[in-house]
Image: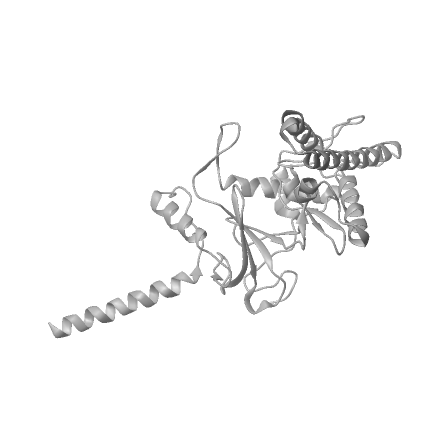
Length: 315
């Protein structure tokens, strides 16, 4: 009995050590197609939910783990920012499906969470070729996640609109110039998939503005088209102001009005750039409309990330 008790204690210690090691070393499941059972879903969802800064992240296709330095979640994806093995290059932002299973969209349709990674891939090429500021996307050994460069930023456009103002001084001039440059880059599009103000981020030191997220249901502008990517944002703010104005403080009404004015300026920048290109005979699409978008993404996107290889570097 004493020997049996000793053996059980040893097994318990091994089990505890294994659990402790797993708690800091997560491996998003490379699940087989056709076997998305509840067991897989439970394992994947629980694993992804508890990833935090300082953990080791094992990625399918890479021999050594990446070190997690930040985590952020949206409606459909989880973004994990991590340094590569030995920190031989800068951090990358890895996007994973937020869960296994189905996402209920606002129109009532059920869409697999995984599908949003494909929407991101398929929409990337068009934005990049048109000159819209977006993160660099890299090819990876697995299609179960998306790898992108990390875009430095201080705040997002929705914060500017919430305050109804741009920072003062040199930083403010940088931000205003960056926003107008970003607006001009969107000139080829009447609509960018899933475009909204929270997806546009700003860096005060450089004035750089960039779009962090999108889907693939873009709509190209046609000659004479007056639609822009800012129209829905302006419409939503205007409707909110119309319905709630009588219940709002005067200062809040003024800040909302300034936000609409700023967006109208950006809208005008996009339209002027579009007209300039039309008059000058310059192409709106930069030749990126041909072919299957999925094929384009697979052959054009970024630089290949190989196991234990830094982006664009050597083994």
